[in-house]
Image (cartoon, rainbow, N blue to C red; front, side):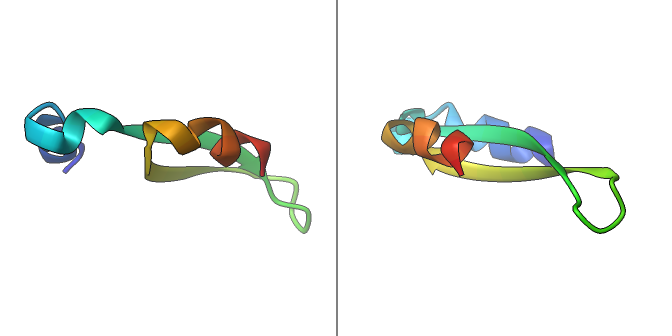
Length: 50
């Protein structure tokens, strides 16, 4: 499925969006999980500040 998302982001207005992946540690178990989102290029820094 990731291939479809990446392919659609490369054409048209999809160039202004970025797929970002952040590693988040669970406070309950201590295990790490990955949080993935597709955000506008202007909001990438805001995503990582959260």
